[in-house]
Structure formats: structure tokens, C-alpha cells
Length: 146
Image 1 (cartoon, one colour):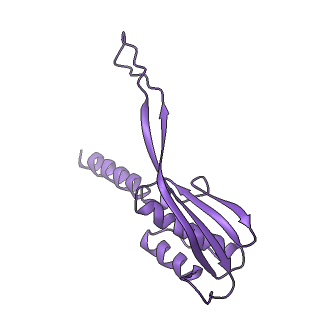
Image 2: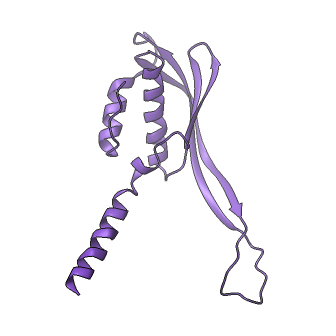
Image 3: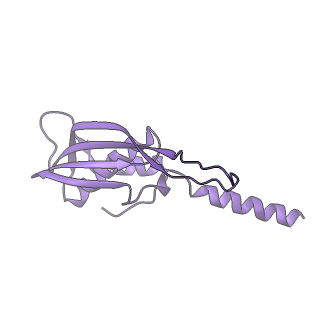
């Protein structure tokens, strides 16, 4: 009996270990749109505030490095939520029609960034490598080579 309890506990703990912000940080949650030379919109959707903003900033840093640049400036930023609904069917409501959908709230953050190799002389600029390392450490997300 004790062995069964320990096994169930182990499965639960290992199952929950993959549920942090690192589990949603992948390409299905972010996108980049080129606007002009060295100017891009980066969007991250998912998670919960303020994690969504941090993961968008992480993606900005990684994207900057992937483009061969070292610094980025945030020239515009917006955040909000998009709502998605899907129909439901309750198996325990045999003779009732339930047409009320479930609604999911998906927070998003979009940042318009300007990339540069050298630190800009005016305005605030993030050093991409420092941001990437700090946020990966903060949210325990595996390191990527950049």
C-alpha cells in the first residue's frame, strides 16, 4: 500500500514539474513580424501576467541575437487579452442542451523593437544577451546557444 502511495505521489510531482512558464515558451506562443529594416513586432501570447510580458521580452532578446544584433530598443508596447470560446457538452446533462461556451482568456504582449549591433546613443536599450540569460534563469528555461 505504501509503495502505491509513493508511486502516485511521484507521478504527481513529476507531472507538475513541467507546468511552469518554461513549458509554454515555444514557437507556438510567439511570432515576429518585420516592419522595416531592423524594426520588428514581437508578440507572445499565453501564460499569465506578468509572466507573459517577461516571456515576450525574452523572445525579443533571443530574436535580436538570432538576427546577429546585440541590442534592442522597445519603441512601442501593448498588452491585453484575447478571448476564445469553444462549445461544450456536459456528459452529465443527458436531456439538457447546453449551448453556453467555455471562454478562455489568453493574455498577450506585443513589443515593437528596433535592433542594433552597437548600443544606441539615445534612449534606453536592452543588451539582448543579458536579458536572455536573466529571464531564462528567472523562469528556469533551458539555455539556447545564441
